Image 1 (cartoon, rainbow, N blue to C red):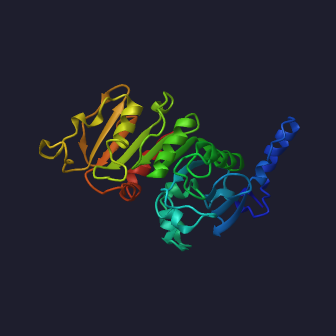
Image 2 (cartoon, rainbow, N blue to C red):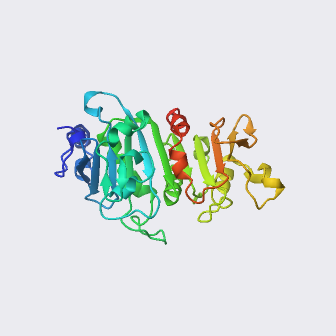
Image 3 (tube, helix red, strand yellow):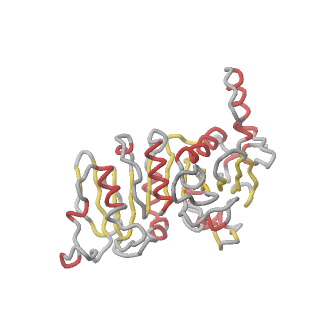
Length: 319
């Protein structure tokens, strides 16, 4: 048995060397790493539903199907869904967007053949998709929102048990999950490699460490759930130091109340500063890039995750 074929008993053989090291050093953990979560296979031996025995989120865990036949380390993707998907155990709706979308059929069904439909880069990654048990609008309960510390408990668990390439830890999320992606990146910038936040704002002040991380922001101009002015515009300004990224935005007929006729992309780099707004979803030329769709409402993620250039850019990033 390997850590890939984990069962509800909680026995993960890959954890034994870590436990032996901790015990031999006289640093027995409060909770042994192999008892923190229990995993049940959902599809084949590559998609698991993981439930905690501690105060944490449940989550889907995708393991590359060639994991046991190699000694390679794999990129890690943390994907955070929107706030509408919560419950006691992972459910198919959790996969209705993001990197594992080809596996999703409906809110009650997954596709056993979805593995063959995955992008090659995604297929050869380890993917974590947490699920909040409920939503706390006061952001006080550590299980009622994407609390960075709660998420990090999962990340530490996965990094301890599986061969994760620590130079390629990517984070993306949409809506509430996009805010959670910002939050985790802001609190653990040394761990992450790159971030793709979609249709969301920045909840904490940007740190200098985060300002060095490759970031591609996406939003729709006509998003009324999270208006671009207070969400992605402000986030871009915060992590670049730009005063107002929309100062040079080419509104339709010069009317500041109307979007441009095209989707537009702008990039910022420390060396060359701010680029001009370029038509389309332009491959990033700077450290921080912002694509503002002319329309699409709150759902800026469907077209973003369906764009192969987005994944090509993400996987090109390395610490």
